[in-house]
Length: 160
Image (cartoon, rainbow, N blue to C red; front, top):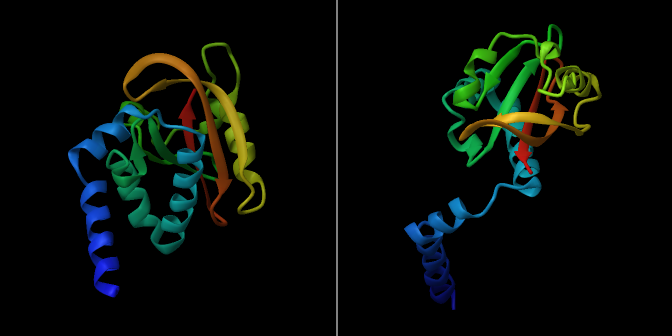
């Protein structure tokens, strides 16, 4: 009985890692559930070792980049970006999030900053227009933002 379970588990791992499984994932649009799940993993990673986490996030996200979903983190004091998983938005590192506006003039950066001021663990949704990592044309995006600890807030967004 135990042997059958082990064989079944090993088969499941092989199927999950197959090229067909990866192709299906790539075809599936990134969504709200994936963004929320990634944010929970981001929080855990930052709490274990934030310097290592930020380094990983800044290297194009590593496992914290899934299609058009990626992590970003800011300093809660001065609002400056300390991590950006979107390779096309690396120029934001060190910039104050509060200065960001979308093409319609919406000051979404202020909303992201305000979300990071809330109590640790409270997740806030912020909607705005922003370019995808794969397309420079602004698209509708919703980010989930939470304070991670006394010093930093992180977010993960998905495009609609």
